[in-house]
Image 1 (cartoon, rainbow, N blue to C red):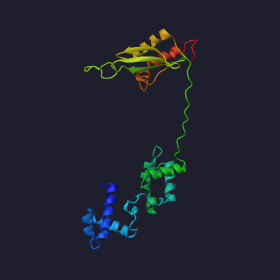
Image 2: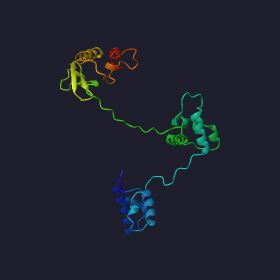
Image 3: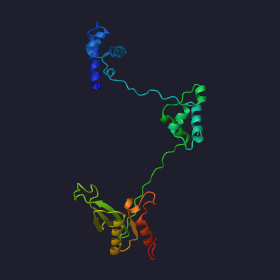
Image 4: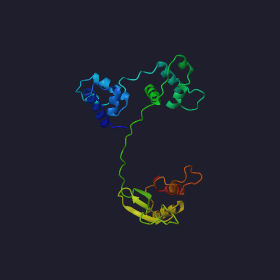
Amino acid sequence: MLTEVQLVAQRATLRHLARLHPEWTRPQLAVAVGCALSTVNKWLRRFHTADPNDLQILFSRSRARHTPLPSPDPRVIERISEIRTSPPENLQRTPGPLTILYYLHRDAELAAHGIVPPRSTRTVWKILHKLGYILDPSERTHRPLEPRQPLEEVQMDFKDITTVPTNPEGKQQHVVEVLNFVDAGTSILLYAQPHEDFHAETALEAVVTFLREYGLPPILTFDRDPRWVGSSSGRDFPSALRAYSASVFALPGHPA
């Protein structure tokens, strides 16, 4: 496919040859320029309606729509509202644009009146949005976290030791990990426990070792690592850390 620069050069050549050889037929011009006969016919018509020295005529015209789309039929809008609020065929969910479009094209009443439903889900979405069935997401306001006081909060997290080479016959990932305990108020590393096989039991043992050395902080935070929170259901693999933390933080004299 020719680029726009090549097409402009081709059209300029066609206009020049048409002026230089008015006796040439259009098939001859098509052969000389190296384009289709339909292209010669289209551009000669444009050249005849423009100034001979107009360079803008050589460029392609925009293929964008120049007129606005016609407004949808009021009966289509009404039917979309009915399908949205009262789903047909005992549909046990709120129908979206794709489902509404499916029922619109099966609507016998619209077909009887010769009304052609929209073909794009975007059109249905715009109608639902205009009717208030789809709302714009609320603007999120981000608030910075309040800075913690020293030793008010301890954050613990696993980090891989990337300098340890992998064993071709053993683990390929998480060969050696370090469980870091960092003071959130000062970003000081309080304790680091390396291990080659951190799982729920060994991770809990590292937490107990830290608590014995530093005591129980007011806040102890961690991410959603399965070794901390257990399985998604919480039944097959209950979280030992959360159960232990609940019992420890509930001790008398410690803030709940």
